[in-house]
Structures are given as structure tokens and as C-alpha cells.
Image (cartoon, rainbow over all chains, first blue to last red; front, side, top):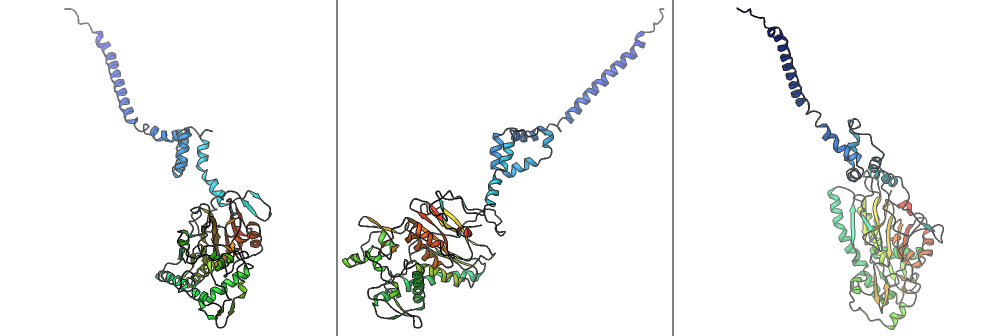
Length: 165
Length: 305
């Protein structure tokens, strides 16, 4: 009766099982990672859509210029978003005009607000004390009185003009 | 008076509504005294009176006094004695009738034609007795208060409304304010562009001053193929020859502003502005035929700010 040979398989079978287990663990781990990665993936996913319009607005001068000029409050919100500097490139030189155009109205308002004088005159004629205006003057400056908070000239209550006696 | 009127009160109360509701009746009453286009007006009766003395109402007396003060103020350029010349120039009916080409109420005679070519009668010849309010017109003199009546009416209405609150009254472009608005600010008042009436040349801020505009842009008609306008130069009896299309003047009262605006227009650009600058209580601007706008040195003090 032939002796039962100890099977090397039994000796060798343990490592094989370990390999199998290891491979299975690896597969499970990879599967778990895969699952985890699927579960973990969504959070970063919304970020690009959030940042994308801002980046588009900032990096594409023509578009933001139009939007900024027409929607100044929105432009102010974009500028105040704290995460943006970490998500997008810092404003380049090309974006500067867009930001400048946001405040483009301010110089106009500031100029008007600081203008206490009548509309500009263009030349002085025969009488040095008289000022000649060749073209109708620009709209009058806004009020400085505290009771006019609108910052722009009000509509007149009425208008003086020549009329029949 | 055939003009657009506006009255405003800067107060929120039922009393304001009641006060404003009285304004049309005031103007109606004044027109009954002062209109030369109403046959039954007191003025028309006075003009028909000839040289006989007549006791006049307080309203007519007050406006006649204002007209004589205006004549003094203007150096005789804005006088109440140009009616014959006005009629000779064709302004013998309401302007609507003149513009529509309706027949004249009176034919143009040699006498009226002569009147149109001669100086207006001396306003100082009008005899007035203050205590009795008696008036005696020199022979051949008839009165027309013209814009003086508008300015006086604006002043008077603003003064009456001021009993209720801060008031503004616009009588056909002659604008009187009783003082600042309720919050202490000025009344915003536009100056229309005579070349583009819907546009505004300036925005004034008036609290203690009034404003009026006189111009050739609005009130014109043709006679014998020649353009006429209603602002006569009493020195010639003819429509004033001037390069000023319209003049706007700010003054302590609307009637003074009316007189001053007409004076500046009659005098023309150079002399008119010199006349304006020589009077510290006045400020204003002129628009020339070519569209140039010339402002007086004191105008900036009255621009909205």
C-alpha cells in the first residue's frame, strides 16, 4: 500500500489559500475603494460647476464686461466670494477692465457729486463776465442736500418757458 | 389767461386739498378783472372809459401799480401802454384766434398802422390816486398788463397758499414759490430749451426766489408775410428786434422776474446781460437765435445743488 504521500499541496495549499484570500481581500479592497470612490466622488463634482461660471466671467473679458455693466450688484457678489481665489486663477490683466468697469459708474457719479458748478462752459466772448455755452449743458449735478438721498437730480416740479401773457 | 397753471403745496393734509381747490376760482376772478380779451372785464371797461377818472378794484389797482413799478424797473421798456401797438401788429385777439387766422376784430386803419410805427404812450402820464384807487388814462391810452398780470397772479396765489404750507405756483411759465419746501430744500424747477421745448437746459433750485421766461419762440404770427411777435419795444412800437430768442430771469418775485426777462429780451444779448448783471437781486440766462446759451454770473447760485 503505497504510503500516503503527504501532499505538498497541503503545505503548498496554505500559501495558495493566503494568496487567494489576499487576492480576494485586494479585490474587496479595490471594490470598496471603488465604491468609496463612487461615494466620495460626488462632493468634488459640484465644485467645478460652481466655479466655472465665475471663472468664465472673470477670464472672459467681453462677457463679464457686458454683464458687469448691466448687473452691477451681481458683479459685486462675484467679487466678494471668498473661495474663488483658491478655485480660479487670480485675476489677470485682462480681467482688470471688467472690474474697473464695475466702478466705471462711480467716477461718473463722483464727478457729478463733486461738481458744484454749473454745466461747463466753452469759451468767453466779448464780455469777460459772460460765459458762452455753445451746446446745451449736460444734465445738472445731483443734489448735495442731505434731504435728497437719491444721489441724482430730481424731476422738476415744473418748468419755466415762454408763454402767452 | 389762456395759459397753463399749476399750483403745488408741499404738505400732506386735507386742508391742502381744500386750499388748492380754490386756486382756479382765484385765477378766474383775476382774469375777470385783468383780461383785455374779455369785453366785460374791468380792464376793458377802464380802457373804454377814455380819459374820465375811474375808481378801480383793489385787484386792478395792485396790478396797475405792479405794472408801473415794472416800467420804472425796466427803464420804460416794459410798460402797460403798448396795447394800440400790439393791436396794430395783429395781436388784437386771443393768440389762438390770431394763430388760426381768424379775422381781426378791428380793421387795420391808418391810425393803427401809425401807432405801430410810433413809440408807446408814456406810462407816466397815467394818473393814479392811491387813497381812492382812482385811475385816469390819458386820451388815447389803453392798458394791457400782459405778463405782469401772470407774474402778479403767481405771486398772489403762492402767498395765499403759503397759509397752508410751502407753495409753488406756475402761471404760464411765471413761477412763484412761497419759500423752501417742507424739508427745507429748494423747489426743483426746470428751464425749458426754447429750441427743443421738451428738453431742459438747466435745473434750478429755488427756495426764496421766483423765475420767469420771456421769449419769441412761442408767440409768433405772420402779418403781411412778416413774422411778428408779442414782445413790443415801446420805443418803436414794433416787435423788438433782438437776437435773444428767450430770456429767463430769477428775481425776488415772479412779476419782477417777468419784467426783467422781457427787458433783457428787448435789450438784446449784450445790453440785456449788462442790465442783468448790474442788478444784484437778479440772475438768469439767455438763449440766442443760434442756440447759444449765455448765463449771468449769479446764475450758478440758483442751479440745483
